[in-house]
Length: 155
Image 1: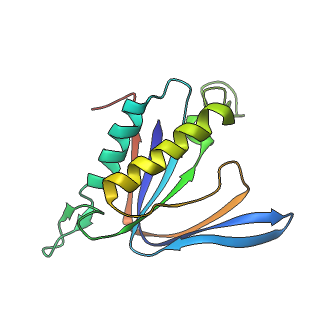
Image 2: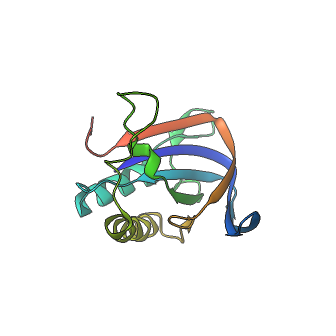
Image 3: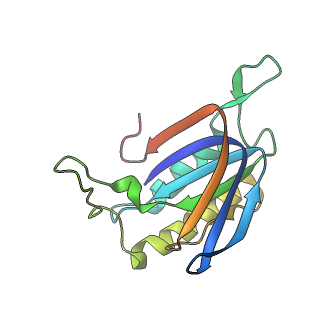
């Protein structure tokens, strides 16, 4: 699994109901916007490890303006959005290949398990986009702070 985690003051996602007609699905205030990409090799272990890492990343400022506390510590929210393009292969040519990204029949159950694991680890509801939908994501990145994590490269 791959994730891009952004510390946000606000984030929202809108879904295309009909061509050109968007509705707001959800909005969060202070917290994390997490884009997550899934590949066939991902396992429950990847889900558990990534969820724990996201919820406990100490990237929010403490009383001394030092990034030393987590989204859980600030009682922040998480908006998780599926993002197959995180597995884009760009080595050859100028058109990315998405062959490593899982198809829906594999990705959807893993994505749902990831959301459930995040909710368990955070202790509150996780806001989501809609898997496979045409989404418009808006955010105010705080810092900016943006972290990239790949469960296959646990450093």
